[in-house]
Image (cartoon, rainbow, N blue to C red):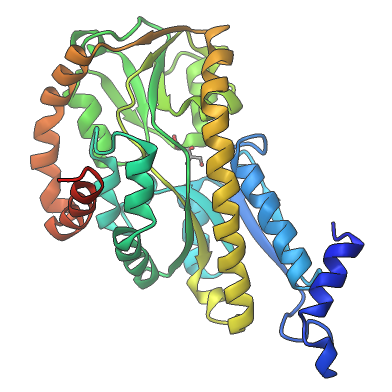
Length: 335
Ligand code: TK8
């Protein structure tokens, strides 16, 4: 909602003083923005920020209508709707989109990032821009990279302390060949599945486990149907905040600039909220799940075991995309 102070400030900046009609550069628009996660995920904080900024700066003309929990379609389905120009926006993981932009597969390589700082440096720098160009060529305008976070494994069979513990656990992975390959290589019986089907599949024991960041495990209530959480931190797959290129091209430059600004401001509060909640979520999850950390030595064994996944998948991703990311990583690691 627009309060009087933000409205007055917005009017002052709108060209009204020059005798132009207020906010004439903005059309009345309701933007459909769908999400696989629930509204209490920090993505909700980011979307709310976008709504506030659009409301204040377009004089209430540009609105976001948000849908949560996959109620309006999963990541891939929504992304295809964007490409077709039948939906404006989605916040999606990069991983289900590798069939559309193969270069995004670099983010699925196991143990690629070590920290949020590394992820930010890559995503907000020239490497992020590189992927934005590829996305745009595929009909998708990426307004910002938001955060899902480091992924960890939950299951109902046993705690995963060492490589051997993965053996035979039936794990849902995202619809992505690199994840499938990584989890098969680790010894699990990996099954690709859309996010929207995971809760029921865990509940009915169709699968034993899944992997997601703490905050997503909490807000999607997976802890209710799982026993063990093993802190594997095996991947950081970013969220993309995408706009349909077909519909984007019909916007005025002022509308495009405002949307970009709103998504960037949304990024700040979304990442911060996600990082604040990460530790809290782990504490909450400890009440329902048996949690174990993995020793440095065992983590090294896991990394060694999945090394062939790199060699096998780099040609599919493209050496150029991998280099763009690893070059940035070298910089941030000071090498
Ligand atoms: C939400 C998904 C989800 C992702 C997954 O739409 O599929 O496991 O991590 O958070 O993008």
